[in-house]
Amino acid sequence: MTDVESAADSGLRPAYAATRTQLGLVAVLFALAAAGWWWTVGQMRGMDDGPWSSLGTFGWFLGVWVVMMAAMMFPSVAPTVALYSRMSRTRLLPPVFTAGYLATWAGAGVIAFIIGVAASRVAGDNLAWDNAGRAVAGTTLIAAAVYELTPLKDVCLGKCRSPLGTLLGSWRDGWSGAFRMGAGNGAWCVGCCWALMASLFALGVMSVTWMAVVAGIIAFEKTIPWRRLATYGTTVILFSLGVLVLVAPGAVPGLTQPGQGPMPSMTPMSS
View 1 (cartoon, helix red, strand yellow):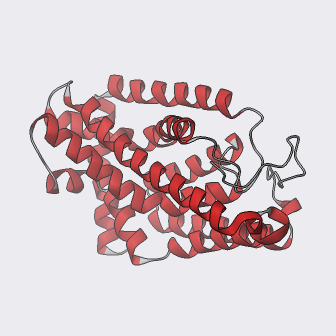
View 2: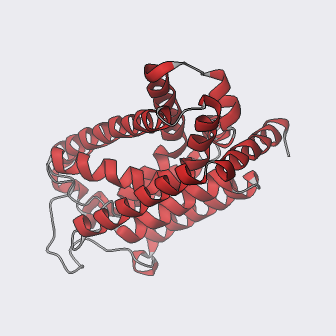
């Protein structure tokens, strides 16, 4: 284990200790995540058209995206919020910190929507599954696997796994400070997870099954003590999925191939 990896793992211990002393706050975050899952399942019922599903209107997508991020990210970010609550010694600032965290992910959702709509308008039918859509989906998954092994991913994951050092290095007092710290923590999280979120689009952003799988991978990477196992395990999973999508998409459990599911085919990523 490298010095950086050891420091990151040691940074998890105060977060877990804070989690035990802030059980009420952690319970609220998990309850909000559960509510987010319940609402998202209702919104996405019957909408999974596989890779590059239609994103709907901007307002609808952004609303679903923010709730989806809360559902997916709150369990893994709960130790960091609990540690911040213990360090700030107030019950008022953690919600502001969490709001800043979600604001960053909302910004990432806006960017994802713009890219999706632009790609749809530029590529048109070329993004259809029977044209280039399948190849793009498989390549996206393989690229996400490669990103797992990059220095940028390593740095961002280290920040997420060492919340004590991250919070101390960016400490700001007051309400605006809490929001800015939450937004900064969200930025590190986006840097860590953007490729996994791209993988979700490649597998079906309207699929609750793949949403749960990606959320599980994110929690796995951020919380288990064995960092190398998390990184290499995620790499193998993403690479294997990418290869299967390219050569045998029917072998991927839970993957809806556009035009072959219960819904009629929809225009990929249209607004």
